[in-house]
Image 1 (spheres, one colour):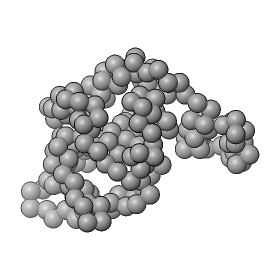
Image 2 (spheres, rainbow, N blue to C red):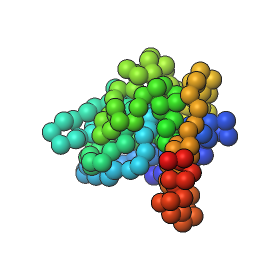
Image 3 (spheres, rainbow, N blue to C red):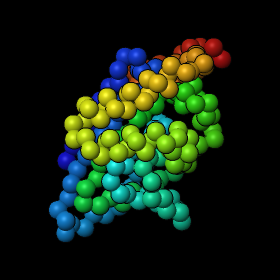
Image 4 (cartoon, rainbow, N blue to C red):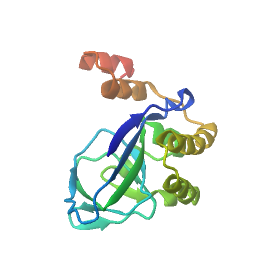
Length: 185
């Protein structure tokens, strides 16, 4: 079992908080109960080279290759099978809006097929991830895709983005007034 986070290349650090890799294999006859996935203050693009199922209340999603997750305030159940590999790109606050113009409010509590947003390149990336066993190589595959996207960005980081990133990443004790001031609100 391997659960790890990899920091992005410095060129992508204003877009990507980390790459999260979940990679494990169970014995064939092992019953694997669904895992409750709790809300997190993040948006991510998650690749699924192997089968999985995600349940929201009465809806089930079986991802084709990758899903784009908005920030959630609800839990969901994730069912995995004997081999599970997930490669997540955990975006910085506001990064999806800057990269593709997608407002956070439009994808809250939602999971969208990533190929509908990013095109067929997602399928190619997922296939490469399937055949790559080294996690650092996986990060390089994904970074190549992200660097191309970052070159086309026309929106810059706003003060509220910086304050939001501080809220998530910084362990310093800022007051609400500090965040408001840094956001120029």
